[in-house]
Length: 185
Image 1 (tube, one colour):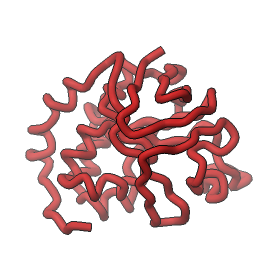
Image 2 (tube, helix red, strand yellow):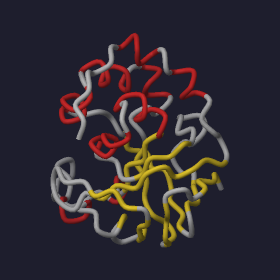
Image 3 (cartoon, helix red, strand yellow):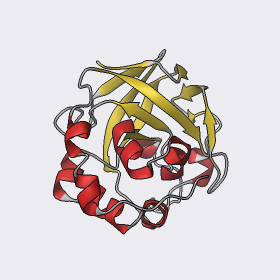
């Protein structure tokens, strides 16, 4: 992966207008990334989404959740979906997008106003539903993209725009492919 200088908060905020212009009803799936093991990423052109397993080949279910009392995977946090314009700005190089840890990167408005919890999106032959748990930056995100990127995505505007992305679950299994339309249902 190419090493890049982290952007400053001012540089990141300069990209907000472009992010705000993301499509609101029909967008595009730009990248699919599986996490077969901790800190491993596998970018694929096609994947299967399954209500019981999430993104097939991803470690979501096996990894479980530190936030759950029983340690089991949280079905409300099955998928992490991030706006491609946001990660494009923060990562600066598409080869670094998968470092964010999200599985789906979409050119689509993921703001609270456009996709509140319960909103369903069709991607390929699958349907996912945005869930309520917030998706916020973590220590790994800050280490990979810089402390200003963390401040940017977790700012009041960043939270309303869901700059760090949203959590979702699969409600209809199907195949997704890079380039598929993302449609609000």
